[in-house]
Image (cartoon, rainbow, N blue to C red; front, side, top):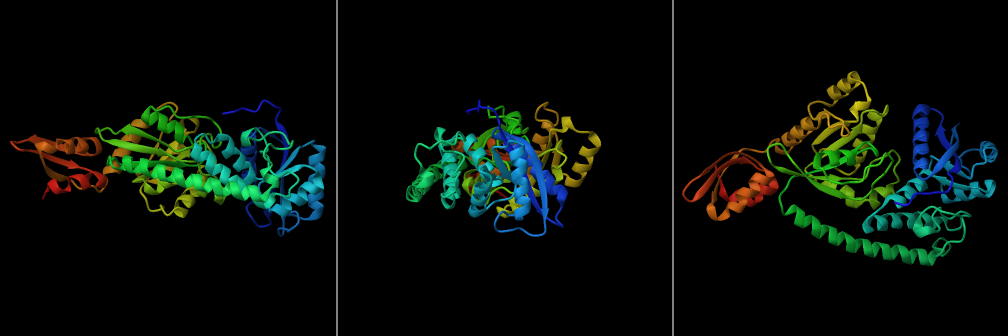
Amino acid sequence: MEEYEKPADKATLVGVTLKGEDRGRSQRLLDELERLAASLGFTAAEKILVSVDELKPRYLLGSGKAEEIAARAAEAEAEYIIFDNELSPSQQRNWETMTGLCVIDRHEVILEIFAARAQTREAALQVGLARMEYSLPRLTRAWTHLSRQRGGMRGTRDKGETQLETDRRVVLKKIAGMKKELEQVKVHRTVMRSRRDSRAVPTAALVGYTNAGKSSLMKALTGSDVLIEDKLFATLDPATRQMALPGGAVLLLHDTVGFIRNLPHDLVEAFSSTLEEVVLSDFLILVLDASDPEVSEHRTTCREVLAGLGVGDKPVVTVLNKTDRMEDPRITAFLNAEGDHAVSLSARTGEGLSELTALLETTVFDGVPVREFHIPHSRLDLASLARRTGRVITENYEDSILRMTAQVPAACFAHLKEFVRS
């Protein structure tokens, strides 16, 4: 991943909240915007939270307050103004005309982070499509887009090499091309998934608020080499790894893009490849950062996103991660609230991992009946499948069959059902 060597750009961060709304929550969102901006190399010259009676069409807020913010940004020598609220194309143009600065919003900041972090061709296409569709109604802006050079990365403000932002016809052609290529990638991914699913291995999707430690947990559970950084949206690409459960069965773990409050809807759709794993998995592992004072609100955000995906009723194992950074009484209170399907741990130190793996095994086989199978010696490959994906209780070899008592997940049972005995 390319790092920016130029000095950090100074930005004035602005949040607008309606009177009567929770000002504390708005301030926390503005603080989160500061972290998002820092991920792109911005430094906050000032953070301004404005309360208004109603949102205005020209500047989002009143002209007098807009002029005040413009003056404060000029005094702070800021090069950018970044809004936590989403701005319409006309509002962005109005702000840029008045201030002479580049004015962007949370939506565009997240787009830029995704563009900088996407590694695979699929992720790059998905982000590129979202950015093109975002830029299309904004082609007449003075600052059409942050990423005008260096392969789509945020750079200088000089004339871009392709000028897609100034040519609507070319942008539309580019969008059509990206959609076509994404369909081809999707077909390839479907083929790869069908091959994986044919193995009849149970699956779980790691979900959680961005930077909660999902990738660290995957590495701790599987020993795999996955990208781990202390940044928002450090990794965006789908990752699937295999882990062994205590009884010998195998579980596939799918990492997914981290959730965040006010995540642009077009990016939720853009990363359908990772979110599809959530829909298709047998159960979910919700990873929360125990050390974050807003952990309860993050849990609520994640639950809302999952409900929006139609998977709110899937079994969920809650993992309270980074407990090495917080005090025990708070951990106990949180776990009591979550119930039996929760565990506290530290992916960094390894404390609590054995409790999690035991809970994962319990979840995999929860509600799976114990069945007896009479497997012919000619089909001992199915016995191996049962050992690999299920929980074997007894095995006895007889003259022509292997008598096996086991719990096997539904995908495995589909291969063994003709040999079941009541």
